[in-house]
Image 1 (cartoon, helix red, strand yellow):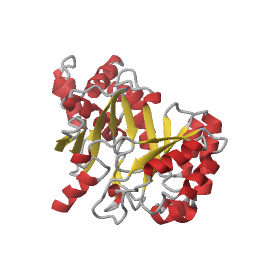
Image 2 (image 1 turned 180 degrees about the vertical axis):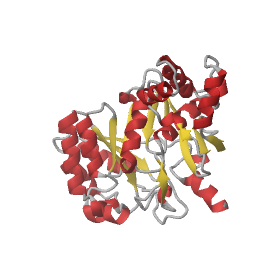
Image 3 (image 1 turned 90 degrees about the vertical axis):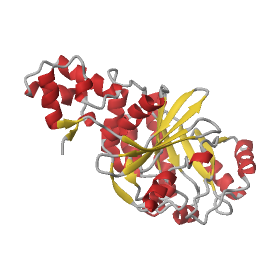
Length: 341
């Protein structure tokens, strides 16, 4: 099978073309074309036909194909089910906000983290996505929708820290001036709490936003709904987050899915306040999506929980629900497609 050319950095591409006897500027030309969203080397109009044929013999440039597309009648949110070159499927969601258009991308096919409230993990992890496959979600979402992308969140299917080398290379590709040139400050990376990844990211001091899927401040509850807590306990997680802030100076966003009777008690709000004391953080409360296969239900105490946090000085917002009419929560559309097979 031909090599995924969109996973190559400009330097790698330039070196490969030099081996084919081509000058360095050809690397810049090909890199730019790839990030504009061409699906064939024949679309590269300023590249000679012999070189296009050479490239086609070694690399593939076709990219993702739309398996299914759903557009919300309520808010214009678009959800894509993309088919990969090997037949696997992943999801991408385009969300429209006043401050710009955000694309939520997947980092893996499936997920092995096993969070009880998430449809992405049903069926487990199949494989990691390549840097190019992550970039293609942004490139082809923009091309298909005609909507300019200004922000990226790695909060789709998969755990980014479980595929960190490829994620870091994706960030390099998407940030490049000859590519989409989306700045790090416009990118959020979400983790369920893989501590070695958080520490590695801290050392790199990237200017992106780190989002931590907290979902419970106490170890007993968190272990029940998030198996990752058995490997990386919530106390160690808070310590790693504090270290990340001290190293980077960047405030962390804590994601918190509100689950009825599980993590929405007043004492749990108070514990969040205690754990965040002295560490600037933002708590993003998420009204739980109803996943048919899960017994967990949306909390009825979201506003009370928010108010309790804010009264004690913690910034807390309630995430606006988008795409509820199109299975926009992670993994739902892919799961339906899998069940058909």
